[in-house]
Length: 327
Image (cartoon, rainbow, N blue to C red; front, side, top):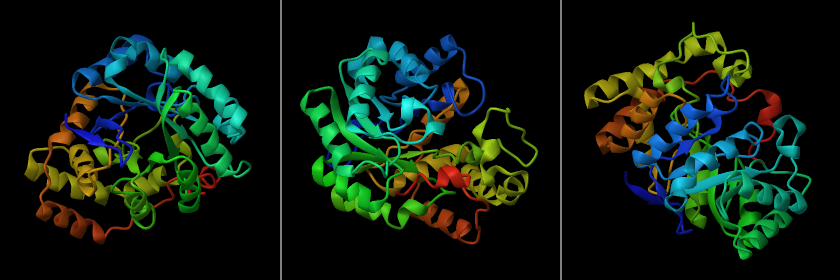
């Protein structure tokens, strides 16, 4: 797989990474440990060198899983993890106090079985802690060699600027896909200006853009999509047009809808590295194949034209989660 550099940071990653959250958290029951380790190692064997986790995924179990899976090839991969929630529990709210950041780093190093965190993200902006203090704490961890690069997730323009002025931000991780294009308004121009890489999560629209989810799909009771307005039965039915467009283009390219969605993201900027997640080996192979799909300027225009008449229905988050993004 081709490599990409995240902005001006010098951090080189595979063009597609692996978002590991769903193996432990958020999308129903956790994957059995042997199967999860096998999937992570299979991703590496197929060229993926960029792996994303967080203390909050579990909490903690996802970092432990990644640490065990990647220990044999640690020096050949880039591991990203995150701090920013009280006790690592999302429902308890944010906590990015410098002492908490330091504690999370120490604990994550042990769970990940490593001596450094390649990319350490603030999971969500904490409005109770000055951004300068957050960036300063990570800067000190970088000085100590415990962290290599600083990242932010779902941050707004002013927070990114304030952080970057203290410690250069290597990457921003936020949702971006063919059915959530909000970052194109302000975020992408800012990242280009400052030389910051972009790591889109949910590049397949939390699975919707694969075409495998329909109005009749039922999710596990613990799947957080049950609370997402965009995944209501009515909105899933209304949004099938997006998948239809991708399916038509995919058929002409001997590809799948998911591969077209990933190829489209990769075509937007050379410093974008999406991190699709999956628990299924065949989906992993399919996603990785998306990095090899070439979309011409004409293909990209066709996608733009076809989607321009479609308005995606439903908010991407319930109100309590939406309040945490773009700050």
